[in-house]
Image 1 (cartoon, one colour):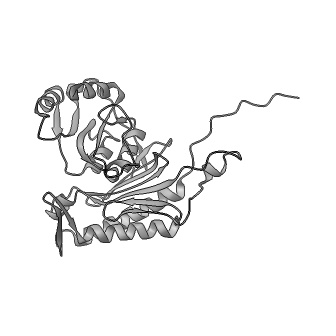
Image 2: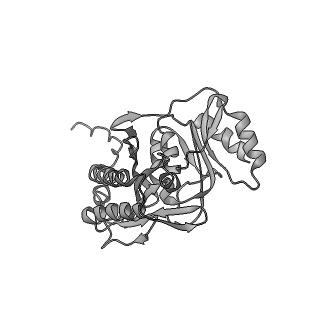
Image 3: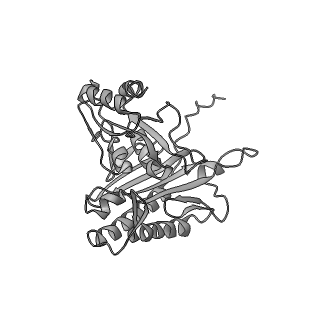
Length: 287
């Protein structure tokens, strides 16, 4: 009797239906935003520096309706309306294949920012996006970031790489940090010395006003790195962080730890995303 052939490593889970839903919902929300772009009916100030338009709410309602229709068991964490529990815990194909007696399947949570870059949008600056992610347990497994002004859609599935408009992308690695263009957003207080050090060590820094879009840009090298130490929420980064990581970046928080925390969704998060060859140098510059 011939020996059994060696077992191959398990293939990445198939999240085709989830990716298709996120893609369609993001495009429809983006179309709604472009229909109203430049002619906002009403702007509500959530705080001194944070505005939310009627379009935010309409976009979120559209996305949540799509998720509930296709995956009613899943939980949802959305920027405008907060947390929503699913009808019951969803068991996906990968979890269903686990042997009997395995731990309960990890929860599935959709993390939604219907309009990232609202201040840009409200002021007629065409740099904003729709961000939709699916997180299983603590790990993002599907991410979509759609830029309706440019009609560009970044996407990623865990273990399957990242794409821009369906074509594979990756982060080109520049040999020297001094050649890198990075997205940088540091707090005003207490970080002046570190900001000067980073600006000295890299080619140039930019701040787009949309964290999700800037972080997604790391996935294909438009930005060589992304650094933001405060002010990020889970919905800002869940999709884009996966896109950057699947494009080849190392993504951590500023302490080199996990960059996403759904257990405390209101917690202010930090993210450092860069090619592995430059990631440690950027962390050191922040010390």
